[in-house]
Amino acid sequence: MAKLTINDLKKIKEDVSKATSVRNMEETSVVTVHFGTCGIAAGARDVMNTLMNEITEADVHDVKVLSGGCLGMCSSEPNVTVQIKQDEPIIYQNIDGNKIRQIFKRHILKGEVQTEFALAKK
Amino acid sequence: MRELSLHIIDVAENGIKASADFIYIEVAEDIPENEFKIVIEDNGSGIPEEMLKNITDPFVTSRTERRVGMGLSLLKEASERCGGVFDIKSSDKGTIVTATFLHDHIDRAPLGDMTSTIMTLIIGNHGIDLEYKHIFNKKDFIFNTKDIKEVLDEVPITDPTVLGKLRTMVDEAVKKLKKGID
Ligand SMILES: Nc1ncnc2c1ncn2[C@@H]1O[C@H](COP(=O)(O)OP(=O)(O)OP(=O)(O)O)[C@@H](O)[C@H]1O
Ligand SMILES: [Mg+2]
Image 1 (cartoon, chains in turn yellow, purple):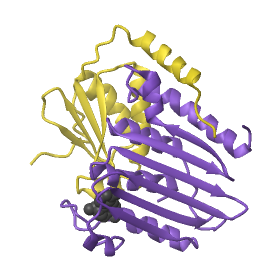
Image 2 (cartoon, rainbow over the protein chains, first blue to last red):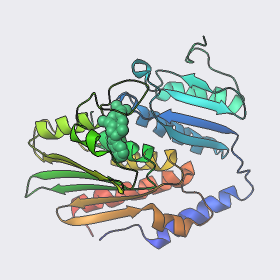
Image 3 (cartoon, helix red, strand yellow):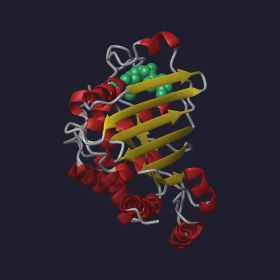
Image 4 (cartoon, chains in turn purple, orange):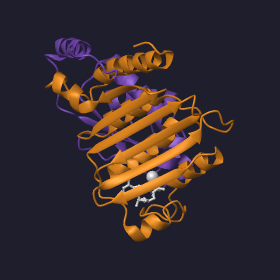
C-alpha cells in the first residue's frame, strides 16, 4: 500500500510554517464557488483551481474559500459569491478562469466590485 | 460530464450537504478484468427509504431552488451506458454509491483530473475528513486527510499553498501506481 510519507508531509509543514509565521490568519473575505451539478458541468472545478493558484501566487492568507450548493441559476453557472468583511455578498455569474482571476485581483484584493460579471440587483 | 472525476465531486457534495464529516472515495481500475469502479461513501444523514426507491429519477430531489436533481441520475446513466452497474445503499448512518463501467468501453469518460477533485473537496469543505483510495490492478495508493492533519498540526490543510504541494505529491504517487512502480 502506497501512502505519502511522514517526511514529505513534515517538509510541507516546515515550508509553510516558515512562510507564514508572521501572517495574520484572520479571514477577511469569503469566496464561495457553487458546486451543484450544473456548476460542476459548467467548469466550477476549473474556477476553483484558478482561484487556488491565484491565492497561492499572491501569498495571501486571509481569504476563506468555500464550496457551496447550487443557487438555482443553472444557466448562469459557474456562480461564485464574494463577501468582503461585512459587506453585502456579490454573486458573480458565468465565471471562468480569466474572470475569477480578474475578480480576485480587483475585488478580493482591492475591494472593487466587478459589476460587469455581477448578478444585477433588483 | 466530461470526466468521471467531476461526477465524483457531485456525489461527494451530496453527502456533505447531508452533514457528513467523512467521505471515502475509491477508484478501482482493473485492466485484466476490464472493470472501472467508483465508490463514494459518506457518513451523513442518509436518504429516506421512500425517496431512495426512485432516487435516480431526476424529478426526485429535496432541493428547493429547482425541482429536478440530476447528480445521481447522470452517474447512473453514464455507468449503464458503459456496460456497468449503478448501486446506491443508504441508512441513517450514511450512503454508499457504487458505479462500475467496462474499462475499455468507448463511451466511458476518462477519470480526468482526480487530484483536482480531491483538492477541491478539501478546500471547499472545512472540517470534513476524506480518504481517497486509488487501486490499479490490485495495487493501491491511499490518501487520508486525518493522517495528514496530524502531521501538519497547526498548519491548516485548507491553505492553498499546502494543497498545492499535496497536489504534486498525489499526482506523482498515482502516476507511479499506474506505471507499477512501488
Ligand atoms: N449522500 C446522500 N445523503 C443524503 N441524501 C442524499 C445523498 N445523495 C442524494 N441525496 C438526496 O437525493 C436527492 C437527489 O440527489 P441528486 O444528486 O441526484 O440531485 P440534487 O443534489 O438534488 O441536485 P443536483 O445534483 O442536480 O445539484 C438530493 O436532493 C438529496 O435529497
Ligand atoms: Mg447532487
